[in-house]
Length: 81
Length: 137
Image 1 (tube, chains in turn cyan, blue):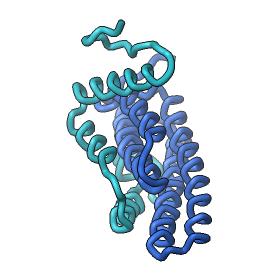
Image 2 (cartoon, rainbow over the protein chains, first blue to last red; image 1 turned 90 degrees about the horizontal axis):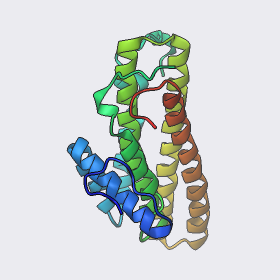
Image 3 (cartoon, rainbow over the protein chains, first blue to last red; image 1 turned 180 degrees about the horizontal axis):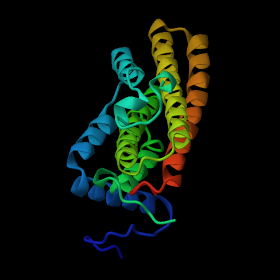
Image 4 (cartoon, helix red, strand yellow; image 1 turned 120 degrees about the vertical axis):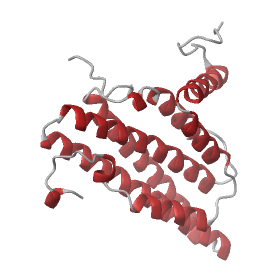
């Protein structure tokens, strides 16, 4: 049986294992990164996605560049994408 | 090789990746809802993984060639995500217009784009894992 406070994922087969893994992952994430957990929950709860939702998501991704995440990059500016 | 511990924010990535994997297998009302959820959740995950890589680069200063590999993987992942969203938009527009043949074509394109994006996401994570960035399983 799984321990409520365990840091090891449960090991079972089938859908029960999948569900237990999801719960385990959610607990880990909630404990260690609550802001991210909230963002993920929002994303997963979204139903009936609209074209506007998709376009907004597209624009956000299109605006991202390697340098935004790696400000200390040593790649020459001329080779950055 | 010794595991390097560059970023405290990456310590929960294993759990996050599991949530991504589960999110792509969850049932939804439409293929667009499924693709949109998978796209959004994988984007959140990729962003956090890239932030962890950014902290790693600042601390350990890996060779530029290694950084270029990550940059290329990130760009492939980004392009694949944009294709998923473009095809999802095409699907929704075909659906709204009542155009069955366009909707069918868009769904096929969406299926392919989703698989491609999944592979690109996996490649990005695998490359970062190869650098032993802490928290990436």
